[in-house]
Amino acid sequence: MTRELIIRAAQGDADAYDQVVRLHQEAVFRLAYLIVGDAQDAQDVAQETFIRAYRGLNSFDTSRPLRPWLLQITKNLARNRQRAAGRYLAAMQRAFVQMPHHAHVAASAESDIDQRWEVRALWDAIRQLPESDQEVIHLRYMLDLSTQETAEVLGIQPGTVKSRLSRALGRLRGVVEDDFPLLMEGRIL
Image (tube, rainbow, N blue to C red; front, top):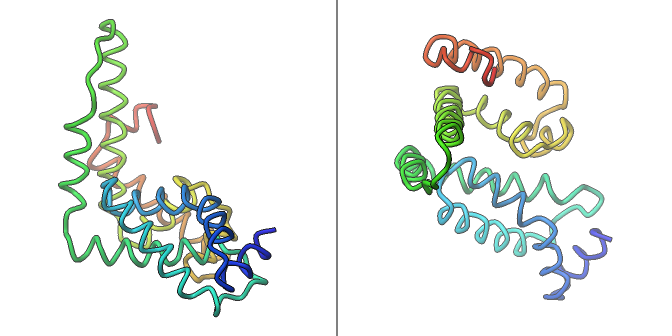
């Protein structure tokens, strides 16, 4: 069905392209957000991804899955935006500062604080890794792509995904042990 939609969209069928967008918009936005760290910037990247994809549909090989191709476009656009803007860290800090504070019982509030701290600490630890390590972790674990899909997005072999992932997780473990030891106390890693 997706192949037929792509062909129809490439021929100018706006309804077909709208369906393609609806099928993939969540994954595109999530990857963009993981890279740029700001919802508005991620939305801009997602929109630009679908504009570029639409322009490139005539040259897309419909025998291949569409999602990895879209995510590759997303990754490239988001990385370009991140490099040009240099706003990633500031956006993440704003997100944590702006988290709503709800009135909970003391234990629940403490749990919320612990959870926010753990998320922020893990995010900060991942950000200390090389870009290639961050990409493979984001795609495989945060977007829950298969090894094959991750390979297609990154333009590498599935075996390379597995070895990169193993090395990335090893480096992440080292960063956590050195800089975020509380995460090692059974909370996350």
